[in-house]
Image (tube, rainbow, N blue to C red):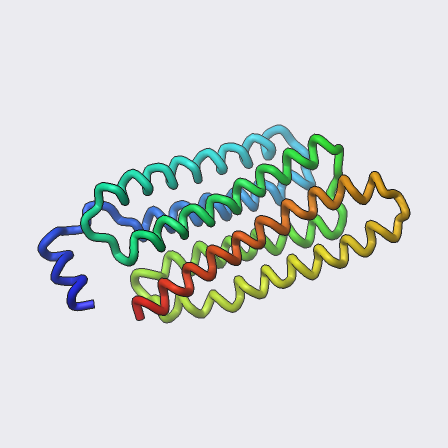
Length: 207
């Protein structure tokens, strides 16, 4: 920490990467909330909001990547900043692809979809809170890690339960369409897990 403080005094930090990551996390959570709203409303407004949040997340990520190239000093390892941003961006990208699959296959939300999306929104909310605490209170930030991982486990459990119910119906075409949607939501949860693993590694390194 002393070494980092020396370099920060010599070369002041020009960009607040902690804030950028938190901003991206907030947009990611907002995107999941918009998806949650859309699966019940199926409104054009909520549909567009999902895409708008995905675009905002991309813009934040691209700006951060450009700044990383120019930054001499970063609050923690620049590869970790980059990886956090990239993995987080994939969460909202899968939210967008979930919406697109549901529209294309004319899939309507069943209990499995509702539960999985609710859990993802909860997990991204907690991720945003954890990243917000990273700079000022990394020990408290760490307390969110277990909760976020529990969200991922619940999504996986809901996925399995949903698949069991699908195949009980005996309608293969119906099962295939819904499985595609389930899989996209599960992929979002997987990248939430990857993001959390990187965040945990950062916390361990800076504490």
